[in-house]
Image 1 (cartoon, rainbow, N blue to C red):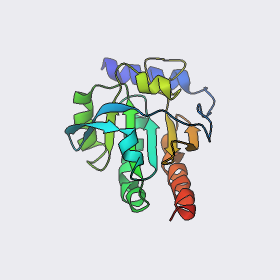
Image 2: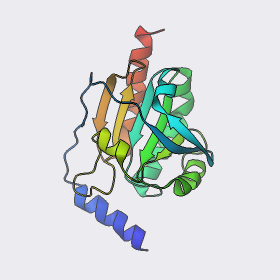
Image 3: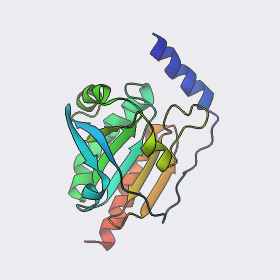
Image 4: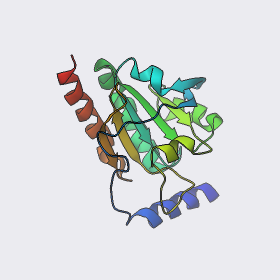
Length: 179
């Protein structure tokens, strides 16, 4: 019950926060590794390794099992095959611990893409994805990162509705010039 009220308070208190991206398009991002889960199986995610295969859709979200984060996870799960066909990897990151993400990766991500745990917020802070009114959470921020570590798309909005479409369009645009 406490988590439900905390989620409602989070949504109410940030509703007036304007949508903006935090790292600029064209910026070079640093590599990171994090404990992650895909289909309930834990592994170490490496951005450097993922970028060797193609672009990476890196999206940050406030908390597993909250309404907006569940919607966004379902949307990314439905689009994962489209991203894969374009050679892109999808990875979600939140402050949640990996045990929570083991469950979230199965139920909400539908075992289609990985989610990484960042309980100490090192990655969240490095990617300027902290939710200002509630710094214990990540903001809903999506990046598309090219294999050269440059940001192709940067988008922040707590409403999950456009994140998948915008990131997929950015990957398609990149793929058109990098067959």
